[in-house]
Image 1 (cartoon, rainbow, N blue to C red):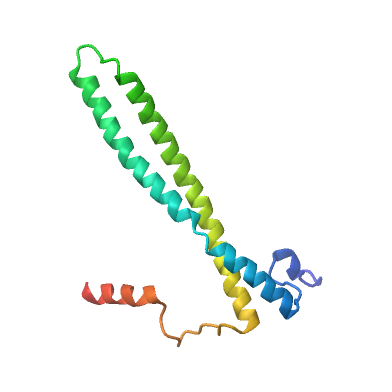
Image 2 (tube, rainbow, N blue to C red):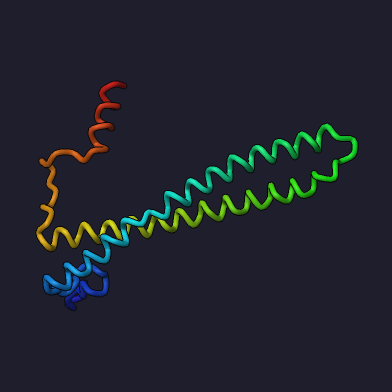
Length: 142
């Protein structure tokens, strides 16, 4: 073990104290940004496109299987199917990235609210979070 003191700022565990006005301004900006939930729209778009992709893929498969000679509209339909699959995958990956960003913003908003004294720190004796009660009820029913 080295006798050198640990530099907590390198690990991101310590931030220098800020004045209250700067914290309130940062909270206002982050709260506004955290209200924009782009990930929900992205996941919805990916789900809808995935569903339509599955339907069109089924139609293309049926045409391919049942036709002695492929109809002229098979190729544009197959192209549409590939585009839907590509865009659904892209939308899903973008929504995951947006969700990570939104969770980090929400975490920072909670930290600022604690620093400003708006919220009190949670302890083990506090009331459970809304999702915890539902999980407890499921556990008792099983």
